[in-house]
Image (cartoon, rainbow, N blue to C red):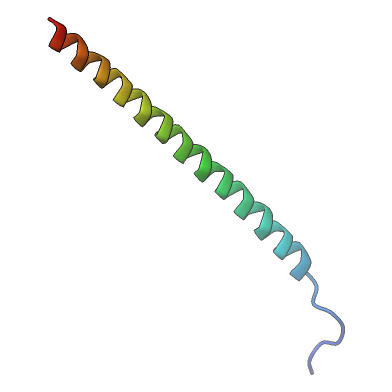
Length: 56
């Protein structure tokens, strides 16, 4: 026979999945932002090195 009433853990599982997805998205965004800043910094340094070489 099938159980009567509402299912036991669906709300907790849904809440946990939501929070874990939030955490993963936060980490992913931070990683992308860090990579973007690093890329911009390396471009700036390369540009400065190129201007110094051309002046010499």
